[in-house]
Length: 365
Ligand SMILES: NC(=O)c1ccc[n+]([C@@H]2O[C@H](COP(=O)([O-])OP(=O)(O)OC[C@H]3O[C@@H](n4cnc5c(N)ncnc54)[C@H](O)[C@@H]3O)[C@@H](O)[C@H]2O)c1
Ligand SMILES: [Zn+2]
Ligand SMILES: [Zn+2]
Image (cartoon, rainbow, N blue to C red; front, side, top):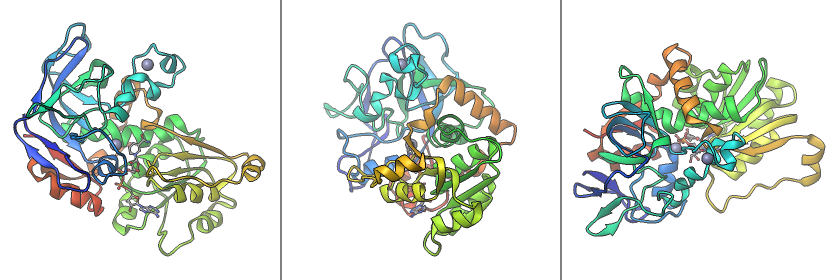
């Protein structure tokens, strides 16, 4: 099959047409990928910020059509349309029993780039190829554990639906699941990429009345307004905590870091009211550390939490997000600003790095 392979961080991806995808095992689903988005986490892998096993096929935000089901799979059949989640959950491990679905051991593939048994089912020229962030979606076909394939109605366009897999689960989930936003609350979102605008949309659905979005890109600030932002800030000309303080009288109830920077996590803490919460959504480089004065943190009563994939439980949250999109509360069609054939992957990656548009989706046919 065709796939885009990263052999060396910092180098262009190689477009191969001779990648071998192995047999579909018990409890697994084989999917003909229709579309897969480009997330900043893919860019971080390509740039070498997150050292992964290589060579690797990036892509973890995919939707497609089921082409084969392994033994014991009964929730989808051949021909079904599915959105794939990069953080599947088994439903019965310790994390799942506590409702911490995005921390299920099945999601370990995000970091190991393998299935739970250490294999990848992928090879080229006799060499093992790894599964990017647990999916290898920049390819014509993927194999995923059954819990990663969530069926959706067939009339939903797959080139938009794919962004639900990562950006929208992560962003709306961070607002609706991880945070405890109440109607009338004020929110700061630092970073208005696919993740940040999804957070803004989620905060709006949760009833936040003031949603302040900070991004140096004017076009992204403008786009954020259609996703629920009520105020936008340019961090290159404005002191973000000062603007937030003036707008809210003391800071927001919830601040989200959606860029991937430890310094911006500190900016979020500085912009939050006493008793408020800071949610880390961005994935900062490995050498990023947050400097927090212990006693100030104690007196302020602020909380600082991370989240993987918006603390989502895909069988609940993906259908819920689809409903919100269909009912006009999530403008997902506006999120996909470019569709490029897989053959143009390197150009598409460069444009994503430059912040062109909002979300670019790679089309596999
Ligand atoms: N926690 C998770 O499960 C999870 C899931 C997906 C993505 N992520 C991470 O979320 C982050 C965002 O991903 P994305 O795909 O939306 O990225 P993106 O590149 O599309 O967007 C990032 C935005 O941050 C803006 N930005 C840069 N510097 C800024 C500053 N100083 N202040 C405010 N904004 C600034 C950029 O202009 C850009 O619009 C990345 O770190 C990504 O790895 C985390
Ligand atoms: Zn992602
Ligand atoms: Zn589990």
